[in-house]
Each structure stands twice: as C-alpha cells, then as structure tokens.
Amino acid sequence: RRIYYAGLESRPQVLRTQIACRFLAYDPGDILSGQFTAWRNHDTVRDALVAELRREQLAPAFKNIRFAPQKFVNQSALTAIGAEAKAWGADVLVIDHIDHVRSDDPKVNGFAESKATNQTALDIAQETGLRLLVASQTNWTGLAADTFAAHRPVRREHVYMGGHKEQLADLMFG
Image 1 (cartoon, rainbow, N blue to C red):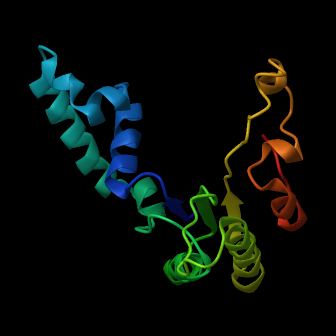
Image 2: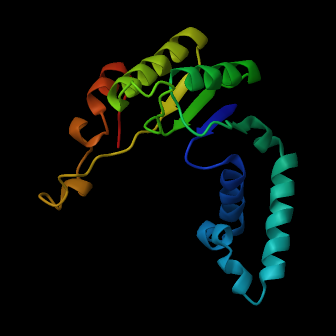
C-alpha cells in the first residue's frame, strides 16, 4: 500500500528520524533532543542513525510512504493534501490529527472550522476513493472525577468535538 501521511504536529524529517530510531532501538526523545551527544558512543550512534536514514531513502518499502509538508488543516489545506495524495497514487491518507485546525478567516470559530474540515475529509474520501485514517484528540477533562475512564472504551464525549466526527466516520475506535 502507498501511504500519504499528514503528521501535522511533526515535520517530515522528525517523523523519519523517529522511524529510524525505532529500527535502531534508540529512544527518539534522546536523539531529537540531542541528549545522546553526552553518551560515550555518540559518534557511533550518529553514524548509525545517518546510515539508517540513508538506507530508508533507498529501501523499496520506504518508497511507499510520503509525508505531507502542511503544519495544520482546514478546508483548503486538506483539499491540497488530498489532491497531493491522489496525484502520487496513494491508497491510504493518514491525517494525524484532524484537530490541528487553523482557519484562514479569523472570524470563523474553531468549532465551525473543525466541522467544515471534517466534512472536507469525507468529501475527499468519497470523491477520490482514498481510504482515510483520521486521528483525533481525546478530551479527558472529566478524568479527575472518574479515574477509571482512561481504561474504558472511548465514548463520544471523550473525542474532541466528537459529535460531528461521529456523524461522518465509518468507524471510531480508541
């Protein structure tokens, strides 16, 4: 499968570094923060990481994933992401996460933009045939009142602005 990944909270180079760290069994936090430079073998670690990143660029499996450059979504940004994914020949479009919304119009509130952006995601799926896997944030504001809530299935009220998402989604799971 060809995957077009819109990791809106992380830049493509960060996502690639995280993947390389997983293959090398390094903690991505240690690498990305620079803490690894205090290690005695930091030169070896750096060389291994660079080699892994180069290997990933050439590996056939990694030719099947592309990262979107966008930092946020709204109707126009998501439309561009969908067009890029379709033009590249993606089978799956991953949006991580749809709540990273920014309106082009300062007069539009966050809920209205979220609702329109989620509708755009549905339109893209229906018009292009792409499968969309859309992540959303959870809202655990009531967690203090119910300490077991984090161990139960996610409910509509736990999904950030979940009501309109539930109306559009084929499946919601947590």
